Length: 126
Image (cartoon, rainbow, N blue to C red; front, side):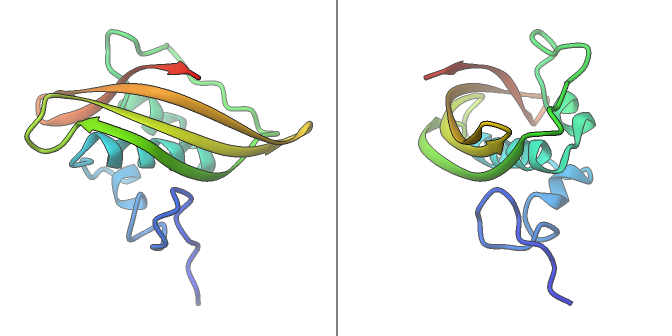
C-alpha cells in the first residue's frame, strides 16, 4: 500500500515527514516547524496548531475553513531558526484551492524557541 505524500512538499510520506511532529515529536528548526504547521492546516489538526503557537500570541481556538484545500508549500526565505538560534524567520508561499479557485498566500513568520521547542509567534502577509 502506498502511503500519502506529506503536504509540506518534502517528497517523503506523511509518516516519515511531518506526521512524526503532529504525533508528538519536536521540530528541530523553525523551518521544520513551519512545514509541519502547513501540514496541520492541510490535514485539519487544530490541536497541533494551538500547541505550536507561542503563548503570548496564541488564540483560544483555530477556525479552519473546511472549503479550503491546502495544496503546496514553497519556502521563500529562512533567517536563523536553526539548532543554534533562539529565534528565526521563515517566509513561505502556500497554495490553496477554495470556492473561488486557486490562490496563494505569502507570509513572513517569526518563530521563537522556548524550552527547546520552536513556536510560531506571528506572521505578516505579503
